[in-house]
Amino acid sequence: MGKLTVDGQEHANIVSQKDLDTDTGEGSATDAVALTGTFNLAIWGDGEGEVVLERSFNGGADWVAVTNLGVVVVFTGPCSELVLNREAGVLHRLRCRDLTSGIFTARLSN
Image 1 (tube, helix red, strand yellow):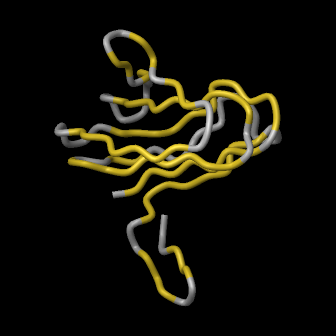
Image 2: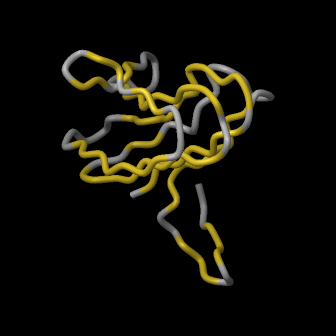
Image 3: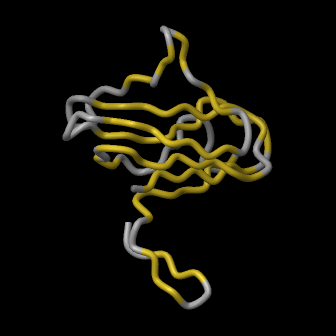
């Protein structure tokens, strides 16, 4: 995704960041990125709705929501999480599953 400049300093670790809003609508997602090891997931903003972390094991042809004990993990407000993925080549994205108002900014980074 390039570099983010904050206070005049460049930061190269931004991998995928996108505003998810009612204009982009339900189903909008960050760009798919291959992340291995521990990576960051962050969501912020005043959005009202649901965002899910998804994985693809076949190059983005199919997406599977991340679950915990069989229940889809749903983010409904600002948060910051560390995610562990040990399998190389797995794509990740954050997808807006439902958004009734406002904007969520969603970010995945290494």
